[in-house]
Length: 238
Image (tube, rainbow, N blue to C red):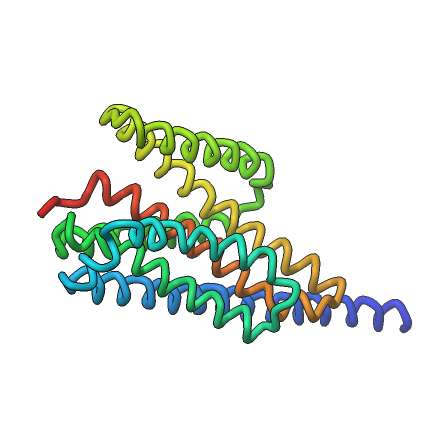
């Protein structure tokens, strides 16, 4: 009888974790979607306002606009342990809006139709890659380490190409960038899932309260970067 109760309790725990995981992933995707909506709304509003574009993207101000999202990402990582779940969510939404301002220039360079088409293609690809990461039984951990190394490589190459200005290097970076962020989408999805299961077993309620925001940020960055690299191929210039 005691053994039966133990088995029943174990099954109940697994069911609770499965239900919690579904709710957790729904919150991750929901938070990420709101962030993307804020980003593209801010980008559209600023990109279609000539006066704001001139103010934000001329002189020293343009460097502030360009690097503000990067600074905020590092600040978020440093402050996450001191933030409440509500504070972390507010920070993420603020970051999403700032990211939108930094990307406003795409509405000047590319046609609105090609931006919308690329966004749709990115969304379809992202959904498929994330679904693979969630359902696959294969451990994507080793692939993740390789992808992070590749990401560092394209960052360095991008900085170098600012001074060289090679169209061939730019094309290569775009191709590799698409592949890297496609892989990271699957990897990050699996990591969000496995991390949740590990912490749910440990009953780490404080971590669980903020982990959905961190997961949303990871997938949000994967989506934005995948979109921007695809736009280099699919976007029609004004």
